[in-house]
Every structure is written in structure tokens, then in C-alpha cells.
Length: 308
Image (cartoon, rainbow, N blue to C red; front, top):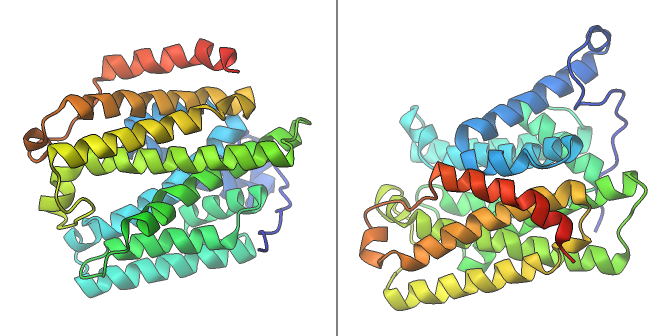
């Protein structure tokens, strides 16, 4: 499968604004776009933003570019578009339009949409498979009003598994440019670990957001949630988190700390979900307190260095 071409970057998009950028419109626009992506993440996901702070600057920039695009697609299908005046049919059209915008950006390296532009920068730099983006939008399309839902494994693949591959492509490219490339075996193993981590994150979200998904958005990711089915999903999540953790030592330390921090945050949330009765999940959203999040993130730094 063809990977996207590597872009030629005339300036480092992680650099601070300077007078020289004003003489390079392409670099200035790219930096503004990546700043917009970071702002989207900061406003929508405290946990993810905190975990991403542990990443090396270049890695952090590219990971935020990925998740910012995913957040925009989520907002199209999660009700924001309708609240702002789009009909159900209009939501489908908006998502189709955004997919076309994104795929064009992947081909050309430019978009008038700053988030799509930032995502394309990352996709071309890290050599994403074009099919990953197509699969992602297929899952998002199944979330749009009046859509036929995908089978759960296909939905998780597009909404989470391919995001894991995207993140791992960023880590691998960063390691290669630092002169410490992953071997083919290491890349295969970390791809599997990243896919498992993405899948685990999505399943945690299914349980945490059960009330909002089923009542607010009329979705049925988990058609019948019982104590038994919840326990089974919690066990699946534990297994996938364990599988992902077993490959983290292969990642460069510049990525490992942030990945472990995110892993530990979701592991803590999964254990809270395990202790929460199903009837409570149907009426309230479980979360990890801010103080505990901060402790988890702080502990990830020394723990990541000891992984083997």
C-alpha cells in the first residue's frame, strides 16, 4: 500500500515565532495551524493534553495534530453541527466534505482548513497509509444521525486502531530521524501494541460515556450493558493495556513517557469503571480526579525510564 510522500519543510513548525517566519509564509501558516491543533486538544481533553505534555516537542506536535483532526470529526457527528443549525442530512454532508478536505490535504500538503493542514503535515512527515484516514472517516460516518452502525470490531478499527498506527508512525519516524531507527520486528511489535492501546482507550470510552452515548446520542455501541458484559469488557481492556505495555520499552524515551502516562491514566479509569455499578454508569460519567491525574502523570516519568 502506498504511503504518503514526505513533505519538504522549510522551517521547524515546533519553533517559537520569530521575525524569520514572517518571510516564509508557508512556515508561518504551518505553525499557526499546529498551534490551532494544540488549542483544540487543550480545550477538549484535559487528560490527553496532560499526557502529551510528556512527549518530546516534535512528537507532541504531531500527536496533537492527529487528535485534533479526530476531535473535529467527532464534533461534526456528536451533535455540535446540529446544535449550530445543520440538519441530519447536513451532518452527513459536512462529514463527507471534511473527509474530502482532509484527503486533498494529504495529496497536496495544503489546506485552507488549519486542522486538516496540520494533520496532513503529520501524515506526510510520518508516511501514513492513506487507507488509515479513509477507515477513520468510515467509523465517524457510522456515528452520524440515521446511519447504519458498523460492527463493533470494524468501528473500533477505524475510530481507534488506525489512530494507534498513526501515533506509532510518528514515534518510528522520530526515532529514525534521531538516528535510532526501529528494526522491522520492533516496528511490527510496536504497531500491534499501539493498535491494542487505541482499542483499549476506545472501549474505556464506551463504558465511561455510556449514558451520554445511549441517552444523548442514541447510539448502541454496547446494546445491553449488564454487570457480566461490563466485567467482560473491563477484562478485555486490561488485556489490551497489558499487551500495549509489553511493547513500550521498544519506543524511544521521547515518546515512551507520554504513552505510558496515557496508558496509566486509562488503566486507572478502567479500574474505577470496574468498581462502578452498571446502574450508576447509566446515569453518570466516571472520571479520575484531577489530583490523581497529576500524580499518575508525575509517576510516569521515572517509570518509563525503567521499562524493559
